[in-house]
Image (tube, rainbow, N blue to C red; front, side):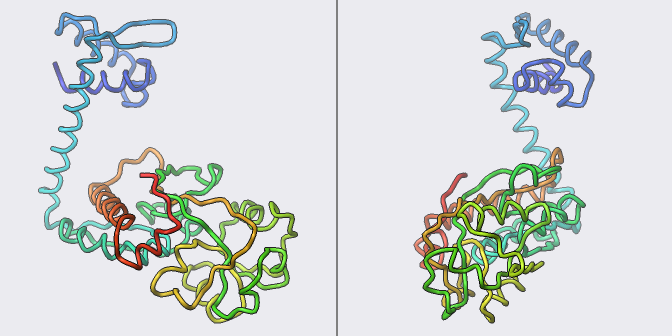
Length: 318
């Protein structure tokens, strides 16, 4: 048995047809067919069942599939280990976007362990909202993003893996004249500073105003192109904003901003790993994600008071 036959077997089992497997592997259909025939001949067993709907596995084929999957996983790990030796000492760049509240709560913990394992990687960190990060991902100036997963029509050219959900709410500075408001309808004469991409404005207005029967106060809505600018304006003026509830619980904002207790409910948002579609992550990016997920899970069960406040409105998905 040969390694390429194992790859063919796994791909055929996953895709359900030789044509789809060949397309996934980037080889010809004839190559996969020949490889499967050679595998059956060498094993002296039928591995596949052909039917009108595609191709399936025999009992022998399913047994071999388990071994093939483990073999390919071991090969992948071996390649990663060898790449680590090749790249040791060679400078590499990794550019990551991190949504603000995640950056303020987990990023330092992630970097502490990541830098020990990957000291040769030069990090470029972008602290910004997903609306700003998505174009950078598509153009290649960001390698990956840990942030809000937008609607499917905003993800063209990108793929996303959910990690957790969080609640979003209307926020104002502490002591704001509308701090006691109970409805979005009481806030339509106030100035708002929001962050959205051009193709995401309609969805945001729907979520914030329209679904609650409120007219969109377009002359009162202002666009901020950075998280820091938006939050500074909310802290220092009477502008309102709409952002993640965990953000108000971070050490830098707690006590200076308040979440308004409105009767209107807003749909939870999902944070995940966003990257370019059909592109293999570099080894530095893969290892960063391993460290991030470890710290995310640790934070969710931490007894640290700050993390407990931040994760109170967060629901883990991974």
